[in-house]
Image (cartoon, rainbow over all chains, first blue to last red; front, top):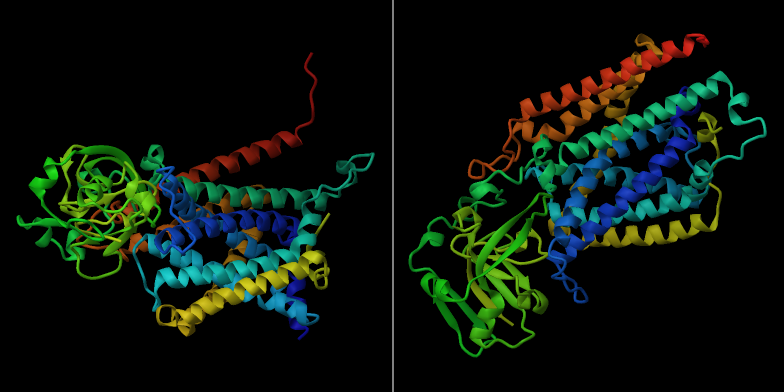
Length: 386
Length: 158
């Protein structure tokens, strides 16, 4: 096994030194934390644990957190590859570990590296609606994130002292550092600076050509993003079309009615004409997709709380919003008492003054503040009050 | 100054941070593995593990050798001043193509939803890559000019 140390000794580039590894590690620590926290928020928003209430304000909070989640994930790609490059010679270390604790730390690198690569690949494929793997994306992405973050914590603990040492400025001698540096040392510093500048440039490049899918002023630069917030029916994107949902006929049925039932004093059955005669409210709210794109539009419709009051629902009621679509996930979504009572939570019939396009949920769609796009249920036909 | 010899050092020092990281990290990993197993019908843990280890192997056995070969080639063929501008252009090109690969190949595209992957991604990636090469050419030109100036002796003008 002398081959591995011999191979390791061939990596003489200053790019494999501790300082660039520490700098990239610190940047990755930040990016992974941002991705994990924003990912947890998105997961809890869609699958709330008993102790979690999705806040209705600020209205654009989910837009920011999920935009950040996807943008940070994309920016992490060059950071991760660069970090793996700097530490690659450590893979060839022999013996691979010194004792049991060191072995555990080394073994945790498999889920750390494999998990990181898997999270970035599946995340990138997901925002493009491409699922070439044999497992459920949402559930596997979520649990892999926990495994990867656990491995990251092990790694951070193990590298804390080394990283701190590498990032702490060295005391200068009276003569100054430049006079004592050899030409090789100066060349090493220039090499590392060029390397880190290239990584920073790559992060900036990927961010610049994708972030416009959620930051409207940069949308013209979103050349490599899978969405443009200004492209789609009525000028903004669609996640699931009426054809895909199988509602092209039922959504256009002239006999369409909305039912409000469950824990109410009187069940309501309202036609589209009835709904139009109710007080109409307008609100500018974002559609913020879990895929990272978002766009603000002016919605007009009936306040959910007005319908609940009309039906005599209790004040703290929760509501299940049901779509006309008969199958697939996200056929229903939940409104807790805060969301249901928010003055901007609407069943919209119009957007920007026009009747909703069927792909945007005609005849009725839910739109509320700070909700993931998949929970802005389209083709709403029933509110079940609990 | 740290150098490559750092990498040959023994195991990390056993500080308090090491043990806290090990205990907390293993607990969080266990929680994640438990979740993956409890939701086995959705996660298909064996297949997920294959993909995870496969990602590791793909990186170490395919991507790294390719990068090593390109790094070696640029070191042998390209003058030092232009080495990083060229590497920057190659890295920018590779990352741009990687990020746009899925819509470029039309994977995930749906006939009923033209708002998904709505651009001509072939043209788009050519435009981005052209921008990258222009920026790196400018970087290279500035590096060459800077190097020439550094060689010129200081001249006092009266």
